[in-house]
Image 1 (cartoon, one colour):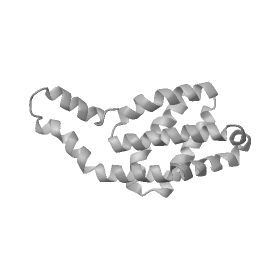
Image 2: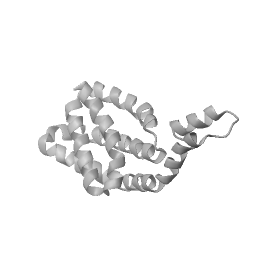
Image 3: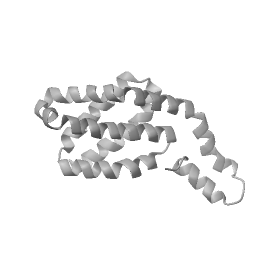
Image 4: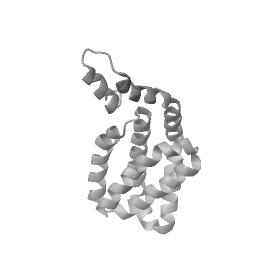
Length: 157
């Protein structure tokens, strides 16, 4: 796994033996300025992901109790993996990493189980749980990643 995000890595590779221009340094400056918020978001997701996922699945169980009885542990596992990659992607500030590392796997899993409508509800409930549990600036960082997941689910529904 690369330590830099894709845009920073690209800038460094394109420099190829020369100093970076002010324009090329701008993403690095933005990356460092947002690090504290991204780190806090990562820590919040790491520390509270289990409770957030359980809260979302409990809400889904109110509508689909038989689904949670049959597939609850698999749903929890999948959502845990997604949230872990969301946290890593936020820490890296790298949406490309999330799309490449998580979304192809998730698309395959969701198509195989043919439960996209139910999963879409579960991820919306997860987004609601995160919105109420995390400060607004931390939730704002997670929103785009969870939107990628729900848009993918909508495409398969």
